[in-house]
Amino acid sequence: MRIILRFDERSLARTRHVLLSAARAHGLDGTRLDDFLLAADECVVNAVRHGGGEGRVVLWCADGVLICEVSDRGPGIPERVLAGTSLPPSVEPGGRGIWLMRRLADEVAFTTGPGGTVVRLGMRVSPPARELAALDAQPGVTARPAGSVLVGRGVLGEPLVELLHGDVPEVQVVLGDPAE
Image (cartoon, rainbow, N blue to C red; front, side, top):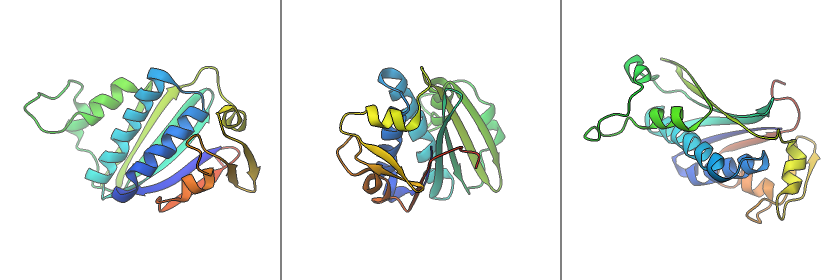
C-alpha cells in the first residue's frame, strides 16, 4: 500500500492524522511512533514554510522500513544548512528541524536544488507489517481493497476514505507495489 497526499498550510492537521494512522497501521508505536511523527512533521512544516507553501507526502513500507518521502517545489536547502550536524545555538531562530530529523529517524536522505527538495525518512518496523493485516488489527478498523481505494473505518472512528479526503487537497491510497 502506498499513500500519496498533497498538503498545504490549511491541511497540516489532517496530514498529521493521516501520518499517525498510517504509521500505527504499519506497526509503529510508543517512542518509535512519536519519533517518526515528529520527524515527518518537521519535513511537512519545512515544506510549507520554506518550500513554496505546499508539498506532497508519499508513504509506503518496503523491506521492514516505513518510508515517508516529503517533496516541495521551493528554492532548495542551502548546502551550509545540510552540512551542519550540530544543534544550532539557542539564540538562533529556527534551524532545528533538520537536526531533529537526523536524530529521530533511522534513515534520512536529502535531495535538493533550485527545483525543490525531497526528504526521505526511513523508520524500521519490527516485525514487518502487512498493510491490510495491520489495518485490520487496529481497534475499530475494518479494511478491504476496493479498486485502488481503501475502504474502512480509521482509528479515530472516522471512515478511512473520509479521513483521507477531508481537508487534504489530494490523496491517493494505492494498494500494491509502491514502485508501480
